[in-house]
Amino acid sequence: MKPNKICQLGISRTFQLPRPFLNMSVLKNVLAEAFLRHNRFDEAEKEAREALTFVGLWSKKDVLAKSLTGPGKS
Image 1 (tube, rainbow, N blue to C red):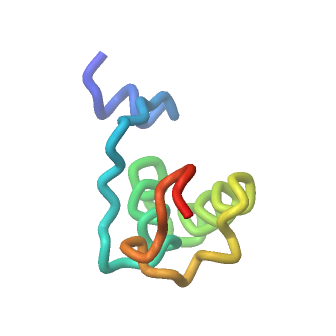
Image 2 (cartoon, helix red, strand yellow):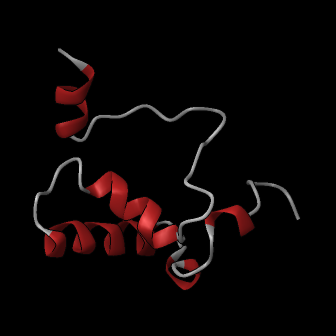
């Protein structure tokens, strides 16, 4: 299958070096990804909210991505 079709099925690969949109909030970064599977904002927003809650980052939703540290860093 083509990569975009695989992604639409919810199957993805994580890379060792994440490349977020540094000048966008954590929520907007996750929303950008959610739009790969949803055409409507409310559906994408619901998925983004659920994902951030699931991984414990909802409290950081308004923080710029460039302000986050990587795992294991202080």
